Length: 426
Image 1 (cartoon, rainbow, N blue to C red):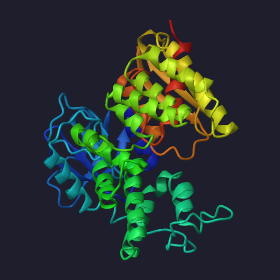
Image 2: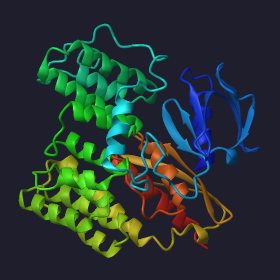
Image 3: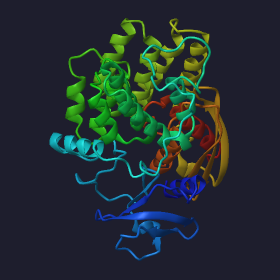
């Protein structure tokens, strides 16, 4: 994972205007700019900010716990045991435990302070954009240069280089609509959603979801509960989910948290209400993540057997994903990295918008790289980087947590990787 992260930095450009941050294992931090990275030497050059106490120009990978690049944290050398003082904006899936007071304080502090990249990011958007952004979706043809919701969906979300400017635009909308309660609540939840989906900045996402009064019958409320869990307090998440009408996304969150019985009970309720294929595939994913492959296969088969698909395209997409997930589970033994000969292997799987292809490199019984070589995904958010990182970190295709809001793309990457690894089994 270390090398992939640094390669991503190189590809993104070392001349980014946002400040970079180095954090060491003892919690000490330095602010400045990573100017170059030498993969072979396992080191990078760092230019500290003028007021920094550091004069060291070069750091080895193994000297650094993590770095912040363009507002997102990447771990280079994991700590042996996480502590409650860790404040990774990206969260850590419950490995750090914080009290309710600590979580609320973290959220409040993040919400009242701008990200490192905020001031250096221009407020850049088409002058034709209608910033009044009415609640009712516009009728007629798709006009992303005019309609705010469409601009966020197809211009900001699909282009990582616009994520920061898009979030700054949402902040601008919050200020423009401060006197309109309905628009303001929508803007705040949209801002929380952007921090959550695009940057995995869970403290800031939670802050804006709270301001927008997100409720768990909508996806924003489920995401707020997930923020609480990822920030270190599962009781806060479970309390929010308890005894209320829940959005379908709660099945995945329960599964990610290891609450399989709750996930399956909720699945049964959604199946009775007619949402069988959507609920069953989430339950199958939860069981697969929990290491219960036989039960997962049963739920994937229920998806394939469904007669209630929204349309032909949904039927094709969900059935393909379910079948490929079954095929992947049956390849688990063959996809054991320790049994794969050195080399680079290629295969593909079905994503949200079509085939997604990967090139997987194995060396010395270790998974060294997972590269997305071709895809048609648009609303992929961060799964194209997050999922390969998880695969390399775990050295396995099992137990991979599908990226929030991009589960289909995440599973396609995992499935394609398993199929590729199976080619090289010795």
